[in-house]
Length: 73
Image (cartoon, rainbow, N blue to C red; front, side):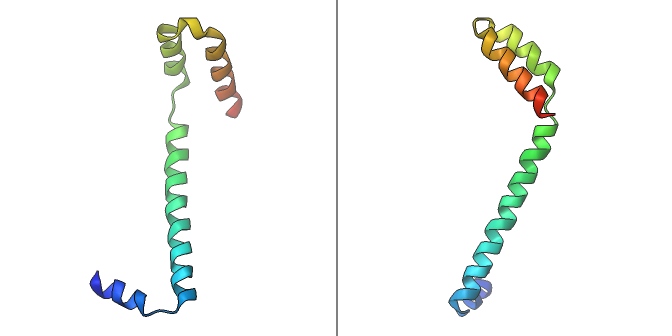
């Protein structure tokens, strides 16, 4: 790892910037992909049951959230 850092320090500034931007984009794509994958695995029926069981005073908000999620599909 020390060799990689040492070689990177010797590169010109525009190359270091390109490597940084590429790394940030790759990490962002990985995080976004993980978020989308988890978003697809949400079970709407379980969420409805939890809302009905745990949040009865917030029924209006509950209905809006469920309808909004179903509209996203």
